Image (cartoon, rainbow, N blue to C red):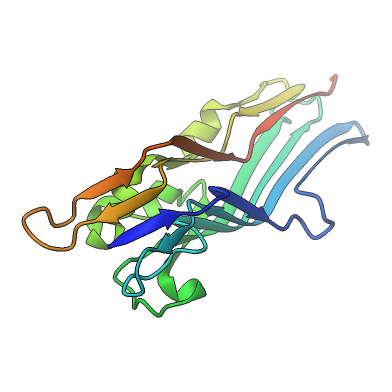
Length: 220
């Protein structure tokens, strides 16, 4: 089974309900400082694939798509003992291209869809790449497939015991990177069944989503 990579390698569509893809605000009132941030993407298609023959399904929404990705941050400090806090959440629907689907499939019918609800259900827990032969393409091409777990959010956050300071510094909540070229082929018969080859390797495509860098301070 063979596919051609389509340009652009990564496509982004839509923003938030207000038309923006990111927003942030800091508000101070009644002796409390509150910082909030949000990032939203309607859909991101990663490595769209056009079938090279009419007997192979196409992944026109990407080898992987990320739909309705939303990441939120809320920090507060009030200058009182244990009065500082941070909360980071994120969610998305992930579409995984399944080449075992019918060659005539279109749109979402070519994909298996999974709900990611973080940090308790990160992408690496929601989707078991090693557990399905339907994801041989993803296993071969992905070099990074990870989103923040609870322990990582905790490590990226700080709150002072006197309640004056709250900070969050996250480079990217969800990280997906993949190799690409002008085409990719999957062997479907023995002895090389399952073997993946990239035609004219071009490099690495990196999609990192949900960066937060916030620090708030409220005197006691």
